[in-house]
Image (tube, rainbow, N blue to C red; front, side):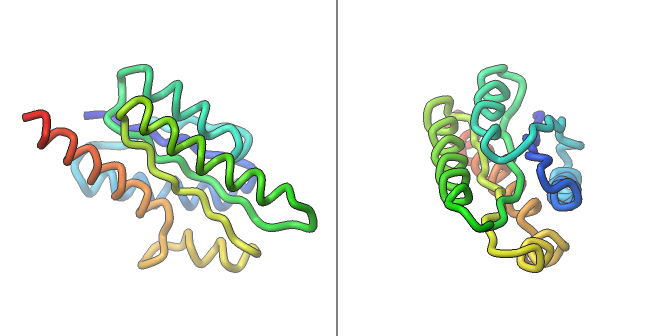
Length: 141
């Protein structure tokens, strides 16, 4: 089984931390490292997830990134459309796509959710993809 990570690189340090958490989880599950596909930001994640899901190469896609609230309503649009788009992809393709995008107020909150431990969003996204892929495989057997 192969897995993919689609990651928005707008906040590079956060992206690296999210990918690290996801990769550690995939490795611990014994599925090896996921293929990583980088995009500029969270808004590009749904289309990337669609490309990956439709390729037939992956059992699941962990979509990772970060959106930090700024002074305009841009945050609301990006968060909502990234979430909606990723959900649409998984429902349409039947390939699990996890929403591992931080939607936070500030950098401190983002760092708290990418530093390992209980609140590691990269790890949680990989765990979600693995769990859904296992259910799909179980039902197909």
